[in-house]
Amino acid sequence: MANTFIAIQTVTVGSGGSAFMSFTSIPATYTDLMVKASIRNAYPDYGDQIRMKVNGVSATDASFSQKVLRNNQGTIDSYSQAVNQLGYAPASTATASVFGSLDVYIPNYAGSTYKSISNDTVLEANTSQVLLTFSSNLWSNTAAITSLDIFTISGNCVEFSTATLYGIKSS
Amino acid sequence: MTKPTKTVVDCSTGIQEVIELTDEEIAQMEIDRANAESERAEREAEAEAKATARASATAKLAALGLTAEEVSSLL
Image (cartoon, rainbow over all chains, first blue to last red; front, side, top):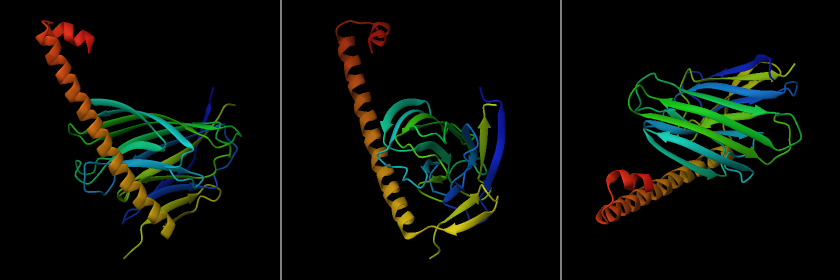
């Protein structure tokens, strides 16, 4: 049972926006990793998909095997894909200044077995435009995780989007 | 034209910097964007086909004399 929860680093997007929020040189000294992020995107739609590269591996690499459960404004669907998708962020036509919330959990990230990645994300636009996403992913790669790149696929993350990486220890 | 950037923090030093994406990363973004759009269209078409089939099945079952409650217990 995890009993130590330490903020390793925080990325905050500056003026002008940025396509990626990235963590490099992640230490191997924790048991699990968690990312908590607050993201808004500049794409001219109400939402845009969030994805994550791990160790620089493309988020659409065949080594990812993901199951997604999604509630899109009341319509529920589920699907499988070879993608590392982390739900959706509010974009430029969503209510102004509203950011989406994202949690990612990666147990045993420094081990030599395949990695599981789970997440829950909500695009809440302060309107009926709500998009909830839960996913579980098996990354068929035995390398220790040393870098993460979180990005939205169609536009920049806007200023003040932020992501904090936490390390979790079991003792 | 300004290249898209990544905001990177090095966890060993705590230093945050803004770096331009490489041409390879930009090309991958374009591919991801196109793939996501076609996947979205595909899923929407599937959902629409499923809804149409459900409506058709509901109408056929109702024509057989099933109540709305009975139909909903089957579908």
